[in-house]
Image (cartoon, rainbow, N blue to C red; front, side, top):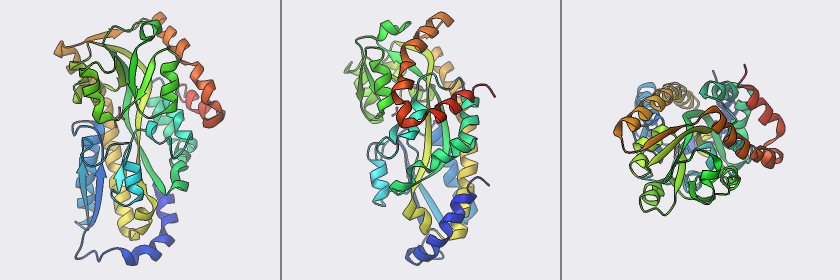
Length: 332
Ligand code: LMR
């Protein structure tokens, strides 16, 4: 099973810390799972499925409480809160781990993956799995990847060529690669938390943003952005993360049950991600509230050319072998 390594390495520490866990018979162990997106999204639905599976598999010994829509913590605070023990599980985008590791920046490189099949191949490869360990030195444990999908560009004006984006302001997640990506277009990126995006767009405080179909749909960005360019220029995926202290402190059997529940919930969430990308795009198109711009091959090539220099900028911190391995996952 994928999580065997975690279960084994956690065994010794568990014996030492198990004494501090309340008696299972009386007091269920609580897992607070905080996230920022809506419930009807790949992450929101995965979290609910995980809650059900944990209840089933642990017979109620572990209770999961899900806090969607940034109700408990925004992505900028959730990892700090996790290290303090205020939340046990989260699944921030891979773009939001910059303070903890540089290697995950790989996933933000523009035009790296052609589709989710390529992403899946890379993530399940030894190199992709090894990257889940990259936050361990910081007291966190990466438990698995979850897909959302490919990002699209939305804006207050039509974006057909990279020149159309020049001079515009774009909300971005807290990632240096994404910052460089928009700077390569001569646009002005602004790092803001997800909970602020709708308001920023509605009040024209920023001109545009990049996100997946499911986030654009569930947070109604399409109602306040008259144009969406179907650029598929980057990936938005998640790492499910917990604190080493919490994870290693679980009794062995419980940890195994929770890990199994998560594996199943992730498989479910990954399928939802594929379905939602199609379904939510269709709903947005049918709403008539925004125009979806499809790029010709020649137009798309211009975006690739404008954004691709970002790869070289970050090669040092990400590692050339990772970039090459990820790119070659497009051609199995
Ligand atoms: C964003 O901040 O745009 C996304 O990361 C939100 C999410 O978690 O999908």
